[in-house]
Image (cartoon, rainbow, N blue to C red; front, side):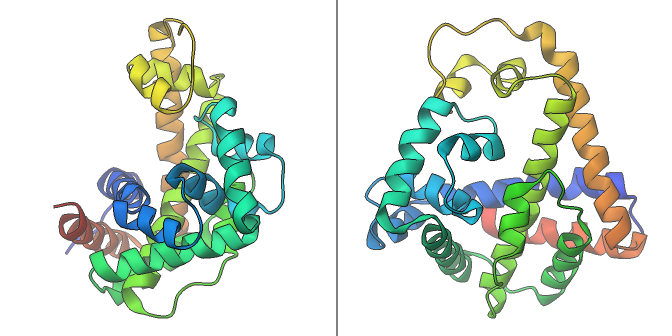
Length: 245
């Protein structure tokens, strides 16, 4: 199978991991799972479930951990979601939704799960509260559910690193969104009003992307050998094909 550099592993695997995570979180089956567990609003389910690992905190803490989303969206969705059963229980129920979705959609791959768990274990969690919170949660025992949970952890790792990098590059969440996306993306994330033109900030956004890649690559470098990185990227690709089509 050959060998792969840590940076090439980032380029081969990270986007697929992101897209698999987005797929399960936005799937109508996940929304239905939430409704069955008391969350009539799928977005309240999302915010309380994904961020419930932070515990009983104010919505401003959730906003700080998430990035990207407007505070005016985070607060009502978080407060509506945690009102159902509390923050930690919301996270537990969200993990169950992740596991059930994985059983229905993700092929079993013990080797990918093993390699992914080693990457998760090798990551330094400082400054990554959502990743740290999810890493502290128990892993499912059965294969597809466990793998889906591990892929979610890897997605939270990349997301947290990107927020750190964006902040280091001097961009606010809204500026980072607008520097790389049309205004409709900012609106989807809850931002309102007249948006500034942030095209001139694209070099800083590119700097943040590059920094994220380097931080992510450093984890792969610590966790896996070059041959294992090639195997990991290949298996992530196969899972992505099976899940994303």
